[in-house]
Length: 357
Image (cartoon, rainbow, N blue to C red):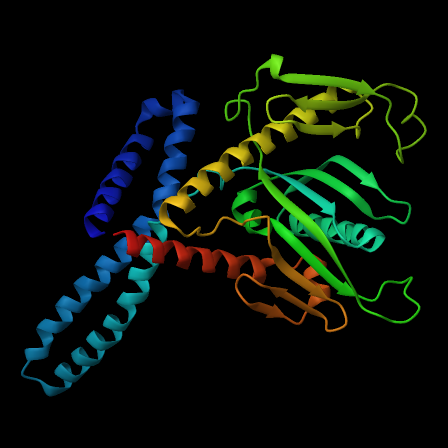
């Protein structure tokens, strides 16, 4: 590990020298790439230098253990003991920083929320989950753009799709994919019985054209008239778009915009992201089969979280985390849950890395 860290530090110094070269400012693309690489290595180098500095101080203090003055020996012994206690934490931090980074972490996302079992109650909770993520995005200064919505009469969503753009959105939300279950007494329930409903959430890394190439002949594009809520002009033009990807059978409908071209662009963005996710799922499945255990995939096939209203409780079943502050979570206060999930899957990656070493 330390030989690798020495190599990273050398690369960091080289990048520093390149960035200070007068010629680099004339090529802004090159400057941005160098600055990004320098910034990426900076955190690792900072911790590594702290670790090396601590080791040097320990060596210097150990030399004082043979000092003829007993007070100096006692001080040196206490200092060595205190500093040696700090080394394991720094070493653990370096191991985490050296974990392979997910190349998708920097991506924006396509958020897809769909009502599952539970009828209208599931649709209402789908709308609440969307508001929860929108509030979280607002707190992070991310931009939320609605791409498609299928509303119910009571203000719920059968389906809602949005683009969320900002700093490392996918890295924060990638573990939200799965089945979210709600337990509460619906407003229409006269007997006061608790109902259980389910909503599916999919977090798709936003795919650029360079990530997924779609041949024009693989697409069937249908134009039709928008329907449902949306204002006076929604039914007056054939602006809604249905895009079918013939090889996979994937269908994307977009009717949020009044412009046919804008709807088509949004639909293709969603389609590319779904195709990228399919490829990622396929790769993860192959890796899982080869090592007989899948680590940290955010598998959307299982129940991941329960929101229990009578108890004011949120439970994430993957990491056995329970928080008794349901209202705050639904207001977008998700950091505690997201950081616990990130820590868990980092630990799983470290364990896997040790097993494969």
